[in-house]
Length: 64
Image (cartoon, rainbow, N blue to C red; front, side):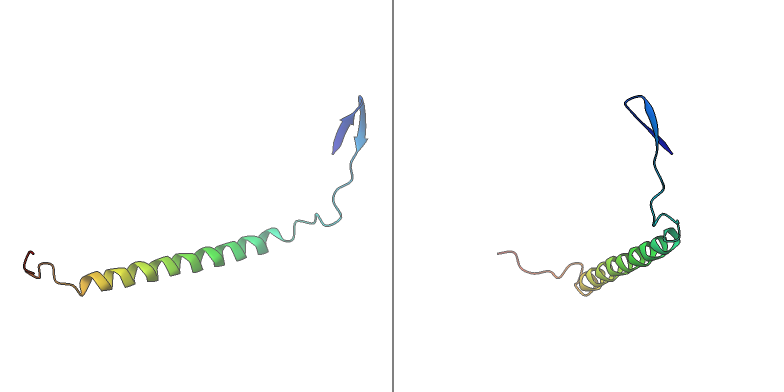
């Protein structure tokens, strides 16, 4: 990789820790977190549905 400074090309060495080995691990952790968030959302949605399901559709309460 080169970078031009004042018209001269300067060689920039690669980063010492740039071996590309962590990309797969990061993707794996990202998928794990995404699944956990999705499961939590599903639990909350199901709990809300169960609360609503326990109520009668028309309980014929008197109007005050």
